Image 1 (spheres, rainbow, N blue to C red):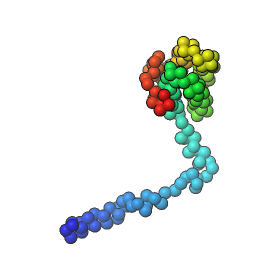
Image 2: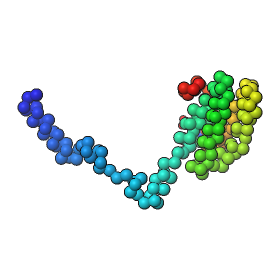
Image 3: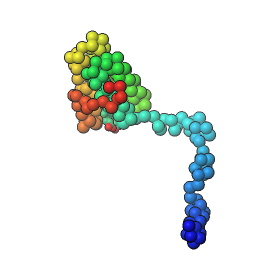
Image 4: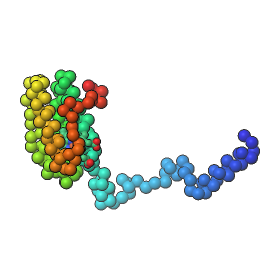
Length: 165
Ligand code: HEC
């Protein structure tokens, strides 16, 4: 490298550092970890702020919706049951994290999953389809009640992304 070029590079580096540019040392150590230094109250405040809301919970619901459908379709009944239980857990999480949605979520929980038990136990496809359709209607009723009627779930969901299926 020519001496002039090297000098120019060195100069721009010095300017960068003088302007408070990023140095690796600063990146690695120049921060405060609120998880360790904050007061209990601040910690709780932060945790409440990052509780997963409906949009996060629903992305998971969408995935499990596909998994549930395709698990049954492929005769993986235990996996189907597991998906349903996880969906049940997700709605219970939502009841805690988003009080605004709690009332409609509780209505959903009254019957949305009620028909799956017998269908899965009997490994009966047509019974399962009826249970799935019943749930689908309940999902969409909740979307409607929460001003998201435009989120319409397909009767036959697209292929699952799960490597298990
Ligand atoms: C408590 C009411 C409620 C229930 C029950 C419910 N949803 Fe939702 N869902 C919502 C709300 C509210 C949104 C919009 C999320 C937001 O913007 O905060 C949503 C959004 C979605 C989305 C779009 C997610 C995205 O951002 O791309 C999907 C997919 C979804 N729901 C699937 C389902 C499925 C499947 C069920 C039933 C198995 C279901 N939902 C049951 C309230 C509900």
